[in-house]
Image 1 (cartoon, rainbow, N blue to C red):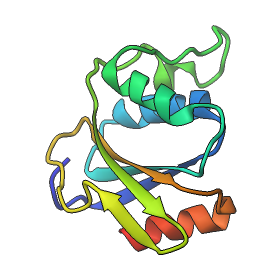
Image 2: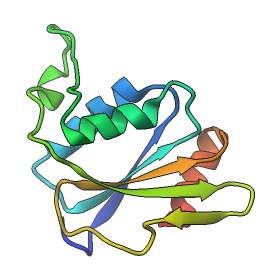
Image 3: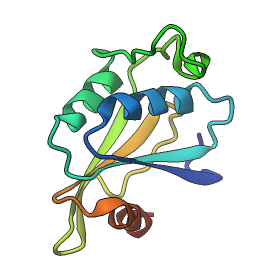
Image 4: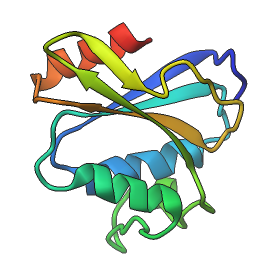
Length: 132
């Protein structure tokens, strides 16, 4: 992935970290990595951000049922460590906080935006568009 990615991929998570990391595995296994990946956590209450961080550090692997028809897209897992650019989003003020200005040239990197309250699907996606 170059700093001038061809496109952005936005993944919105809410209380579903296992599906999110399965999605991340499949994206990082993709042959075309000319994109920047943005993961937004819509104020999950199930420790999703913790588990996503653990996955990125290599401390947690994705689990896919043996007969899952899409298993080859996310298994075997990629080699870790995946770099995370962590950003907070205050939905009330509309201000992003944290590592907002840096960019990645590493193909194994993504932005993780945590939103301070659940904005629903459309609100979460709109937050990503504001960030981009």
